[in-house]
Length: 73
Image (cartoon, rainbow, N blue to C red):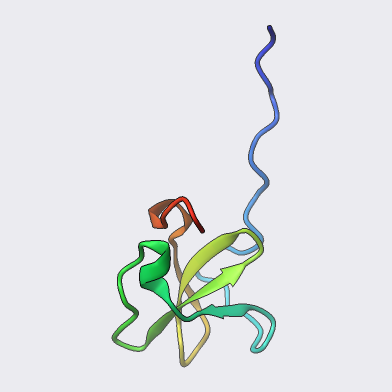
């Protein structure tokens, strides 16, 4: 049996990018997905199949947190 050579798709955004307002969904119940509560002016946003920590004022991507989320994300 041959191993698959396909890799996971590249993320749609990178840390440091600024997200356009209204283009992506806010994750309201972070605890449902096993993530700590948002605080200190940042929120979680869903971009494609990934979750990111985003500065609420600037919409700058601070961190990709998909790997920290529970399996139900």
